[in-house]
Length: 282
Image (cartoon, rainbow, N blue to C red; front, side):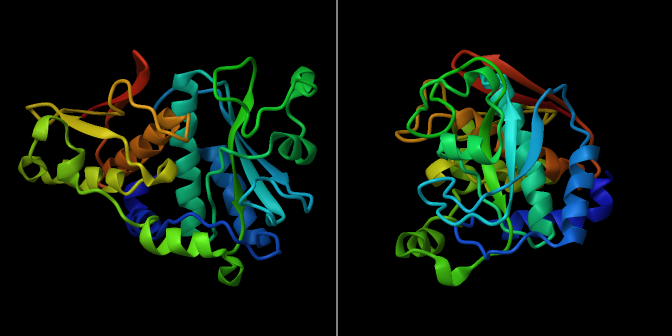
């Protein structure tokens, strides 16, 4: 896909993307679903991967504590559960979600889903189907095999169905993002960076995160040729255990911000102690 030729599409998607927890009870329109499936089959990412984006149908049962009435269409982000695989899945999954947003569909990353209900709707656990189920999601730690790291509903927003807490979160939290100054490592001045890097970092800072924590940090080399994105070493969120997936989501936004400008780069997600570091070489 030539992202630069569709710059306005992707800019609009990044700027209008938000998480939705209340959906109309109707399937995705056939034309839009066909476009989604074509996109999934044609995604060309800048790194090797073995994850899967799997469509499935909900069966009229809650899939998460705050997803009591999911729409008919959903998607699971499947991969192994080591940190690098989870980070790559965040990257690929967010690219899909941004594309869906551009098609005027509503989505939301759900990591704390109800595993038995997801297995009922989308059998995927195989020999692990009878293992004790965690309280939410697939696990808090690395486990054997391919798992649904997160799921997302695919559908149309039903504003009237929002709970009070969701309305408050939507109006007060979901769209609030830290400035670039707050996200730069070592007090670097983003205003002194090349304009194309500033543009891509602005894409990146708009990425979503668990609890809107925005725990990623950006570093740019002195010559402006290398950019890294990672969480601070030792960082742990009080509630969300897969922060490196969020960093992968942020890395996707940065890469997309370069792509729409026609800027190519090498992308390398590497294990760095207790975290994944994304290195972009321009």
